[in-house]
Amino acid sequence: MTISVESRSAARPGAEPSPQSLGTAAARQLATTTKTVPQMQGISSRWLLRVLPWVQVSAGTYRVNRRLSYTVGDGRIEFVTQGAEVRVIPPELGELPLLRGFEDGAVLESLAGAFVQREYAPGDAITEAGRPADQVFLLAHGKVRKVGTGRYGDESSLGVLGDGDFFGERAPLDPDATWEFTARAITRTTVLALTRSAFQEVADRAESLRAHLAGFASRSIPAQNRRGEADIAVASGHVGEPVLAGTFADYELSPREYELSVAQTVLRVHSRVADLYNDPMSQVEQQLRLTIEALRERQEHEIVNNREFGLLHNADLKQRVHTHSGPPTPDDLDELISRRRKTRYLFAHPRTIAAFGRECSRRGLYPKELDLHGASVRAWRGIPLLPCNKIPVTDAGTSAILALRTGEEDQGVVGLHQTGIPDEYEPGLNVRFMGINAQAVTSYLVSTYYSAAVLVPDALGVLEDVEVGR
Image (cartoon, rainbow, N blue to C red; front, top):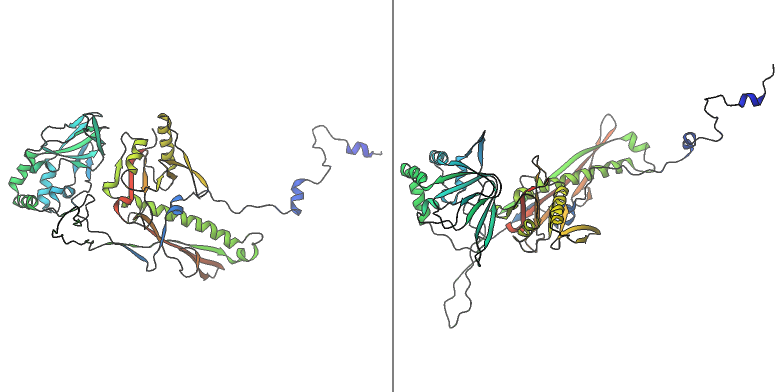
């Protein structure tokens, strides 16, 4: 029986057709692929590192000399909670100007126990202008707006208070004092109140407290300017030959010093990989590139969040502003940038920038964009509003906005690093060969040295408790 070629090549029903040319899978065996360098999702814009002026710190330590300032208990007070009950931590009462430097723990415990907890709904008046000021108020939770009377009889906002703030701190000393403003709750608010009579009862039983109060009342206040710095006496507009006052600019006796911090890691590459797999890209160079990107991300995170030198933790308490209603509004940013001259940059988490955009749209405002380092960025009042994903967003949906004046010439915020270090690979970053172990693994120590300094308090401001989810 003879089988024809035609019958062999006929396709059977349901069978795959025979290929008529070389397939792509086989053809790729003879081709060279076009590759990208290794990609990394964790790389951000790192605007903060790009716009900070970097100061060379040759000695590894940067000392910030300032004029002497007189501090009069402008800190914040902390509390403890047990269920719905809130209590002030007794030593925290030392943040009140009246009790600054008073260290009798038993008396502070008695004063803390004399505070009464009160709750206020949004819109409630806690104090009213013109009424007797006979209580000290500690703000445990919530936001309170201070409202005064403007020049033409209308209401004028005097500021917003937040968690840890206080007011009426001189009420125990002045029985004739009256409130100069109305304090009204913006949100649901919890305060602790201490009446003058309750304070006096504790003072009647404590000789140490009475002696402290007597010294406080008789203590002279050193001459100071509106920034709290030691005053420099200057005469002007005089005629004749009056005797001119002698003066000098006093300095802080213990200026702050910033030591360079370090972020480092050990990069390991097997010698077989480094020897054989380097065409068309060097394995060591690509491993090093990705490692450096991770270190730079950590560097920016530390400059924002480090408890020693991070910007969020080093903003002066007088430069911390609270939002008026929760979301970041144009009014809030106006108040933030008004706290300093020459605000150069604003930094916020991308979600915060989106929340600000929603508030602008709600008001029919459309801020212009600026060209910065070849990129188009949002701006407010001509100040770049730059994204920084290192600024945290809390589980409650709140974040912060930073406002910076930068540069040594303007007494602003500066970055610190040291260049010219051994085995330097980039400015302030070096890569040092550590050897090859018994498993033929090559090790490199990759280190970057950095810090940040705030030269004067008003160089840095923070808009706190910004709600990004509304």
